Image (cartoon, rainbow, N blue to C red; front, side):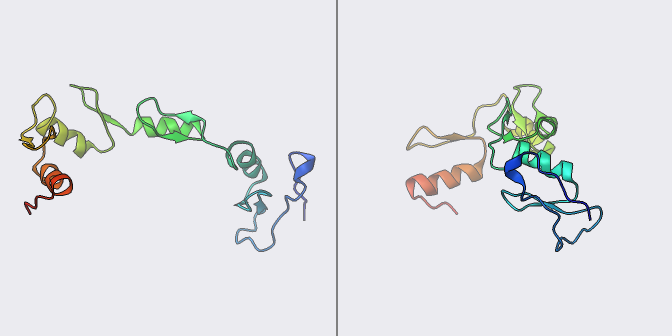
Length: 137
């Protein structure tokens, strides 16, 4: 059985675990969080980039943050943008609904008790109930 090498002298605790379900080619445990990895290089990457560190990659369009640039690129690529106003949506159906009901139009539902406006009846009814205790259900 080969012994895994630690990335620095303070991490000599890294060892092949005998109780890991995947025995080929090995199961290497993180000395900080005990997460198991099949490959030593993956465990070293985990120590260098992930373990106990805040995400560095930030989405320029929303508050989403991730530790890997590839994850951020996938996050951005999976967004659907309204060609008329530039607003981003996670689902194509949400984009279609926005374009059909809201984009470039004035809100259909306006609260007479405050400045709230909505394009959707359900959101307006929820506002009346939550903010003004008016039950319209």
